[in-house]
Image (cartoon, rainbow, N blue to C red):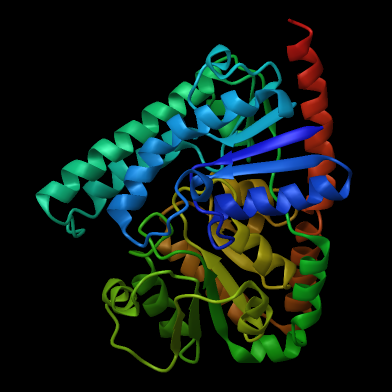
Length: 385
């Protein structure tokens, strides 16, 4: 098949959405499919580090993406686009192939979280009035674009079963998870030290952008609860993509040598950064999937998570004991303490279970199954014409 991916974000592997398209595309190409790309870097080639300008570009992106598709429609059999990136009816695109809207996390779920967060953490910095007005309009437009994309597409591609249950329309939909490249999974496995060494380290790791949605306001209490029972516990935050001052402020803990903050790292540095980790934590309130969780499992790091849709999809078959209710700092902390205090034999078995579950999520398998489903739905769509 000839596939076009459309993404209203930069082609940066540190961003979950971009990484999905980049790794899936490589897996497709390995099996003989031809893949092209159109992202915000193509629509707006001049680089920018300005958040307002980046937001404005995302608002303008659908128009430029639609123009690109209209001019190249005959070149593609399938257009696989991030939900909201191409909220345009097919007849206006002159496209007769399969138009897929891919969710990386339900925009409805994320909006519900934001509403809850404003009430629960009313002391969050809100910035200037002009900025609040701009970003409110920005978020409202992104939401409308996502709703339109679901209306106009031929097929919805969802990352977990929860989103399938919540899909209000009768639009054809599939559930296809994300995965790891086999070589990368093997690297994570081989880079880890012995279980004995890991258990002695007493380190808790977190991978992900630092945000309220991903548990930033919970970590301070988690740390205090864990250290009260395991005084030697250390903590490492990887890929926060923010100023370390903000992290220390949210933690409400003075800078210390038993908390390490790594705002950015190169992908090939991750195995070494995880080498000392005993246990991971993902206190995320809303998550479509969870690459950080999957990478830690692949590295043999038992990782406790809030029972959000994405982590639940990963852990439910084989590691459901690592799920705790969303927002339950007490239960998440208790689960971390239990693993940090485990005997070596139990810890070894848990590591084996983690690696087994992670091994089920490989791009090589997921790409083939996704392509097979796309071919089926492409035949359905073209049968109408």
